Image (tube, rainbow over all chains, first blue to last red):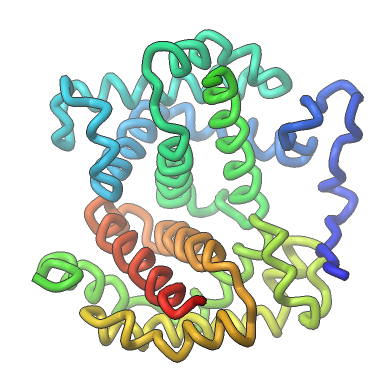
Length: 168
Length: 147
């Protein structure tokens, strides 16, 4: 029998069907995880544009194939295109945080855009999520505990799911 | 040019020289078990894994993390022949340990997060890119003998 390490009381999973739980097919954040995200976002938001921009820089450096989605951009570090796009990414994450109990609702338009216009292959959401995690870890060392690492990884997974849920 | 460019080797070795391999090993393995709890399936004999604190403080986790990362560190010395360097370990992970190679990719990325956490701005996009190549190479080498 495979035994999973059980979580303590502070990380109880939400019961399906209760307010705050999302559909049965996606994972959802616990109360403790939402608290971590909200409080860290308070700090991150003061440097949101820089965080978004750096995450993109990391994405293009580590995974050069992702540049194929931006043939029309100047992707050199420091470029205006990168800064503008990084700010957009950060703003979208901010929207998701502000509506953390209804991320699908908050990102509905963005989800449609990715499905019908941008059509970024789903594998790339994992890559950008990882680069966002690395950026947050390097900028906020005191806050990036193992629990925070988990919360952010889950949050970014949920955002990625929402952005690809209308693909087909 | 081998697996890494001369510049990338410089970036990797430059940072790795400052890494406390034992400590980072424990941290990386601990975070793997916390962030991706299904990975605990391989460690049922490790005792208390019931919370993040329990996992991060668990002495068996730390000891095993140390072992894993020292092995990774040895592999770095053979960066141009990772498949050769990890051949025996690859067979072990397949035949005896029955570990899905996806776990090597997960651990590699957790290691990158831990390095970013420790080194902050020094772990810049270029350094990260070099390390992503390394962890991908090690994961691939460990999966190479699977059958």
